[in-house]
Image 1 (cartoon, rainbow, N blue to C red):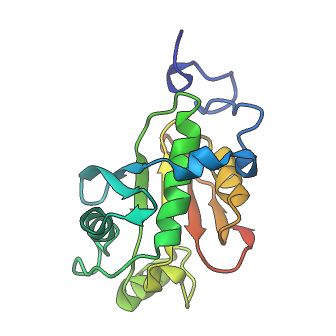
Image 2 (image 1 turned 60 degrees about the horizontal axis):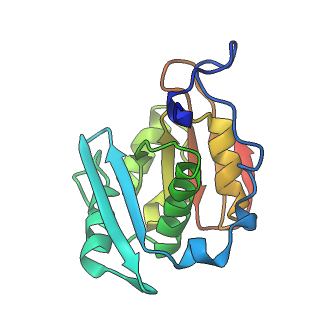
Length: 192
């Protein structure tokens, strides 16, 4: 049987597969899901880094893996400056990836943007890239993400269902498509 990520997409869908019927309902996850060890598989296209890290086990963050994740989330466009990242953001990112893995989607979580310095954020604004003046990226509480072969609408709906903060939907034409902004601020949704 073909895995969900290998199945051909319905015509007219732009290459993205249709979601399983309950993919938007992360609240239906059982306690066992949240108690198991947390390994996250991430790729950072801008720096060409990839890591698969067990960062949480037996109710505790594994400090060395957490620091590695913070390093991967650094500002790769602003001098490689790093800072601590809100652990709740990693929970949302892990939960999103672990949830879609239940359906055979084994692709790494692409980190398009993590922490940003104020200078990097301003450069993006000046270049016309959507970046809020007081972006949560600048305090380690936001990430722009994508999962290959997963429609942005589906990914954003899943992130939103975790109810951990804001979700921005950024749709773009092309083979890579758009991305989703996930943060640990106030619960809100927008399209950019």
